[in-house]
Length: 152
Image (cartoon, rainbow, N blue to C red):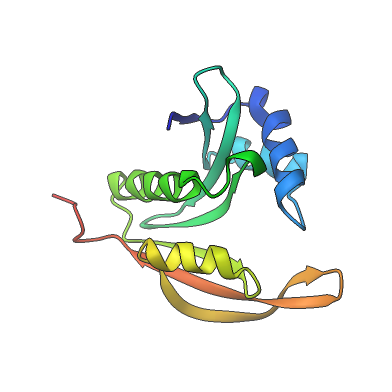
């Protein structure tokens, strides 16, 4: 895995993955805003220079929220999402963040299992948080405590 900072030049490739793998994808503006807001935007690049995945972490004072993570369809089920998630947690840890939060659709069983295996636990539910084709869907709020794991 070769994680590096996302640039504006990467947005087309990231957007193509996002639109292919997400039922309700972020827009180009969402990615551009994240870059301009100083969020931790990373891409996983192949040796040939192609982008296989991306992750966006929004840091606050001592916590961070994982806003988005995606892996190209052809690269899924190979451990890349798990490796990227672990790397983003390490980045947060390196910045002395105490915990990382995320929201996940209640129907996204695979993602929930991945987050649980990475140390996240359920912290709450946001009712009707996501809009969907057939109305709304709850978001499960998950948190991963970082302090004390390898900070020192």
